[in-house]
Amino acid sequence: MMHWPAEAIWEALYPQLPDFTVEVLPQLDSTNSELMRRIRAGRLEPTLLVAEQQTAGRGRLGRGWQSQAGDSLTFSLTLPLAPRDWSGLSLAVGLSVADSLHPALQLKWPNDLWLQGRKLAGILIETAGMGEQRHVVVGIGINLAARPADGLSTAPAWLQELLPEVDAGQALLRIAAPLVQTLRAFERSGFAPFHAGFAQRDALRDTAVTLSNGTVGMARGVDVQGGLQVQTPAGLQLVTSAEVSVRPLAPPAE
Image 1: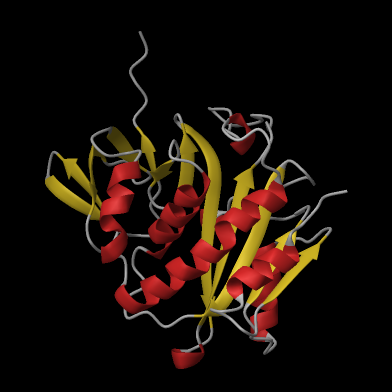
Image 2 (image 1 turned 90 degrees about the vertical axis):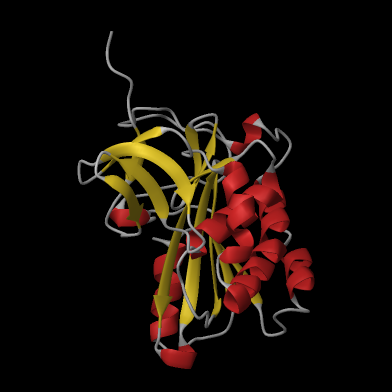
């Protein structure tokens, strides 16, 4: 049976979010989907929702993220948020998670954590509501144990490669309070305060990349709004579209 330090997490977050709740469910379709449903139904309390198993987890651009109990940490956090500019939020979240877990982790624009060129974790951010009632839902999925590489060109990384003794509950306890602090800081000041920290973990900087629209170039880091700068034959291109994915350019076959 998995142990979840829900009370310790609640105690760590109570000073920032007095009406905060922590909820752990054995199975859900998707923690993000569930929190979005609750927000649309008028249930607006700040919530950290964990699913021991996800049957229809979602990643960026509609990609799936299924999980089994014990092999992943899958959770979503919702709270009201009103930043002046939402640009770069996924980068700030990724930096917070990486800083909470291990110095060896890198960040792949715009929403993945990598270990030695392999995906360890993904982030999905959604919002609901209008104006001052807008709520953010931050979904995070982290591989804890080795996972099969079915259909993937590169086998995923997993956290217990770095931290063999850390289980899902311990990882969540490390992440939760700093993540809320990051969201509050982002609300006040946007991405700019996180820019330097992201640059230190930037997995794509000064590497050849290809965009899903066919553009090929050299990644040159991100700007202070979190846009990816790509040097192309036509000049420096700023990539901000949520519909564009980026991957390292594969070396030519010998």
